Every structure is written in structure tokens, then in C-alpha cells.
Amino acid sequence: MAAPGNTQQPTPAWLAHIDAMASEIVPMTVPLELDTLAIIKKMLLAPADDNDGAVDRAVQELRTYYRTTVSSPDASGGVQDYPAKLVMFVVGAVVDHVFELAKVVDRRDPAHKRLADLLVGLKRSGAAVKFDAENPQLGWESENLDWHAAEIWRSFTPDHTSPAEECTSALNTHALLARLVAGDLFPVDGGWRTAKCISEGLQHPPSQEFAIDTPLVRACRAAIAAQYVLLAGDVLVRQLGAEGDAALRRAEWPSWAERLKTLAAAAAEDGIPEWDLKGSAAEAAKKVEGWLN
Image 1 (cartoon, rainbow, N blue to C red):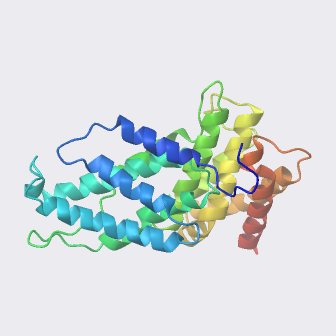
Image 2: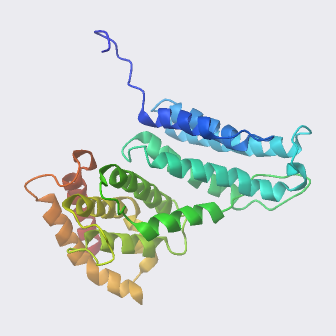
Image 3: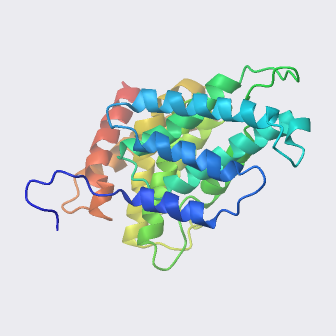
């Protein structure tokens, strides 16, 4: 127990998770995974009032790390000869770390937003980079991001028999995806994916495709849907417009609002209290009603 007057904050769970991740990485000649993880750790440990600065510094450190690694005479394994491939390695490692950490970082923790902002910042700084063998710069590579997103969107929620921890992890990772949709990392189908997740999460009774149908899992799906409304709903409205499949989605909005209001008015909190389903559902219902008006 902390001594009286001790204002030291408890160690966040994600910090121990980072250390565990680092201990499992096998160092290579170019310890890329360890180095990129260290940059992310430094970003997350920055003061709470330094969000933008912490992310900007991490992006710049990764860009510098790429240039230094490409030009280092001590780096073997051919990375100097394949600077374009090294972009994929660096960005891919960062994406892997972000999605692994998102499982354990609560979506309400400022660290969660920093993880999303890091990927948004990397894309914005690297998307316009043209490959130049004489002056290699860290560009952007979406292959790993697309793979992680497809896996999460495909499974939606866990199908384990004891899913409490897995559901919390799913809620956090879907919140990350919603932030990334809002950051324009999925410019083609982000709105459609958002609409699909909201529709699936609020469907009652749920679709037959879900193997597990318990009150806890239903609450998890609804909590995920609420996060998509709150974090990525504006992208849905902007991308879908009023034609084609969009008309079908727009027709669903009144039922979304009603379902969210029902969840918000429930006598007891469904799911796990930290999900705050009642509160987030109430806020999301107001947002959907705003779209309708």
C-alpha cells in the first residue's frame, strides 16, 4: 500500500505488457522490432498533457531510425540494398506493436489515442514520399494494417466460452480501428466497415453467424457499435452519402438510434462496468439522431 500522501500513479498494465513483448523478441542483426517498440514505449510514457508532441516526436524518431538503419555500414542482412523493403519492415513492425498493445490499453486511456495517432501520423508523413535511392525517406506501407483490420473485422467479437477478457480486448481493438477510420487510414471502405459493425453490434437478436450468444457477448457487441458511432460515425456519413448501399444503411439509422436509447435506458449496466455501455449508448444515440436531423 502506498504511504500516506504518496501521489505516485500506479504502473499501467500496458507497460508490463510492453516489457513482456520485448522479452519475447529475438534480437536480429538489425534489432528492428525491439527498436521500434522502444520508440513506442517512450511515446506512451510521455506526460499526459503532451499528446501531440509525444506522437510527433515518435514519428520523427521512426523516420530518423529508418534513415540511420539504411545508411549504417554496420547493418548487415542487405537492408542497405533494399531501402524500399525496409519501409515495409519498419512500418509493419510499428503496426504489429500498435495492434498488440491496443488489446490491453483501455480505449479511454490517453495512451490508446496515441497509438492510433501514431499510425495516422506515419501515414500522413509518409504517404507522399517518392522513393529516392540517393535520399531514402520513410514512406507508408498499408499491407500489415490491412491484414490486421481484416482479421478483426472478420471475427468481430470472440467466440470463446469465457469471453470477458477477450471481449474487453475486442472492444479496445475495435475502438482503435474506429480511430483509424476517423484518421482516414481506410479511405475506400472505412465508412462501409463502420456501418457494418454498427449494424451487427446493434442487431437484436444477433445474426446466426455468432456462435456465442450470451448477455455478456451481446453487451460487448453493442459497446463496440457505440464506439464506431462515436469515433468514426462522421466518416460513415461523409463516405456513404445517399446512393446505392448507402440508402440501405441510412434507412437503418432510426433503428440504431432506438436500440441505443433502449440500451442507455436499461435498469442495470449490461456487460462489464468499465465498458460503460449505458453512457456510451446514450451519447451514441444522440449522435445518430443528429444525423437524422
